[in-house]
Length: 245
Image (cartoon, rainbow, N blue to C red; front, top):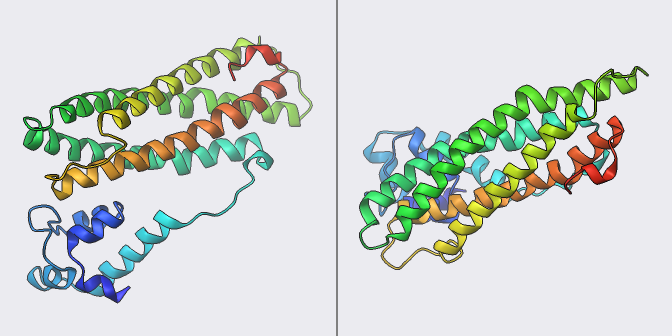
């Protein structure tokens, strides 16, 4: 990890967008002053490099760690909690950061790259919808799924109709489709997240973060649409054709 000390801040962020969160924590300018090496930046800001290197190592592990998990073996409550603590927490953390990056890029490069103005607008719409979407899942749908599982485990009969789960699940699946379509449009506008030759570090960072965000969304939606929701409907006793996927 010590080899990072001789790399520029821009190089480190470009190879792992999560490093930006570390640099922002320590107020290290990786955009306008991104050509400085990490060693130079630490010296100029009178910062202890050991702690920063340790956090960068964690960021790198988060970026590359791929641990096989058999999600289909999770209970409904376990899977709902996993989605909340893994994907919802990620989205809540990343969306404000990405929005900030895109706002800067749109303001600075929008005249030469008008597509980034569109990207900024689309992402802000996604952010607004995702905030509502996750709140609805955490406050309404997931508690209902957990209650259904608890009642079934206790051998109790739930005196409610099948719209108790079916209606919110139907809405969530429609919103998943909308978010996926929006991110696909962003991918198309940015040429599969490829930065132009004149892109600054923040520009490149925003595209890398968007690409990671879309990949996470794909896994997020897969766990819900293809595992959690069908299992919940089956447990509740809703007919298969009621599920959208």
